[in-house]
Length: 85
Image: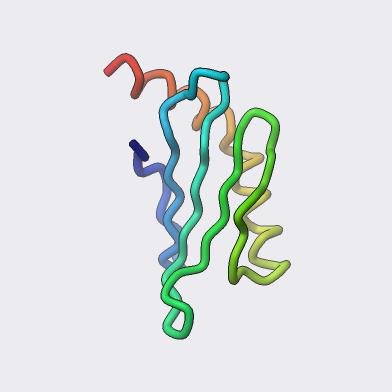
């Protein structure tokens, strides 16, 4: 299950999973696109492992990497609270 975390001013949605059995948390970023339907990227914390990136420009990815870096502590904390809740 994925939980809402942040909606950006350009309609980009950032959601996260509960903490996985291996201690990682999946962060999924998705943005609607008129031509391609959705652009998306996945990052696994705490290792900042990016995969399955589609449709984002390098400048968009740099913005998202910075957002994930600056909020990772919250995502990791919330992923554990969601698990208990």
